[in-house]
Image (cartoon, rainbow, N blue to C red):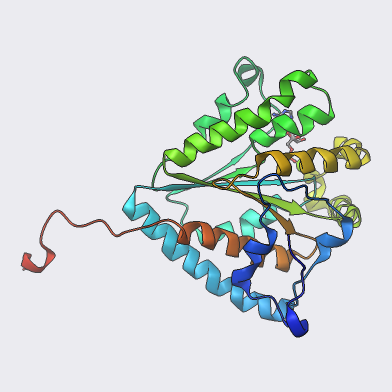
Length: 282
Ligand code: AMP
Ligand code: MG
């Protein structure tokens, strides 16, 4: 990852942000609290209209993806509790027509799911060609919470990095693009978000007292995420570490990453099986 600020203190162009934040294969990212507040020289006033423009373009490209029907896109969203996954889906992914877009939130596995291999429930929710699929948490929980809480022995979660890479590679071979986004917040930001949940009766349902245990495990989670980035950011299925203390920066960057992912697909309008010029409507 490069430096945040553009030359002469100018803003980093939106088009350059994904490249700055993409994790190179094998790169050892160090998650430092300060990085979560980066703004890349942007102001909220400038970012607002840019997000509106990008969302319009995202909608157009998703329409073409749907019409084309040869490619799909899987977007994996991960973060610590209070990291803004739900809010990102509301702000950015609302650019997509619900027809052709699915969102799946992965919770602790059910008894039925636990009877199967950990990728079983995940594979079923992978988007098909023509669709965008958004994962709110994902198979990465199986090397995050599962590792930190020792839910399976080390030798089992250790081999999952390679299994996950093979799984995602296989999706890419099937023309399903894979983009993975980590919303990076600082400990202070998590505290603010938790406090809001406690203060606002409409948000009480979002607070889970067990999240406090995970907050105590902050260093273990940082390490587990750093290993995910080092081992599972591949050329075809990259991880992006997105500064998310400022929601407007987060939304701008996520929108730009999704735009890049859709623009990378060689989408075409399907050729009609009839000659439109020859059809005369009475
Ligand atoms: P939330 O996203 O806040 O609704 O919380 C969902 C909870 O499910 C989180 O505490 C996750 O850590 C947990 N979870 C998701 N996937 C798994 C998994 N594979 N194993 C154990 N816990 C999981
Ligand atoms: Mg939660």
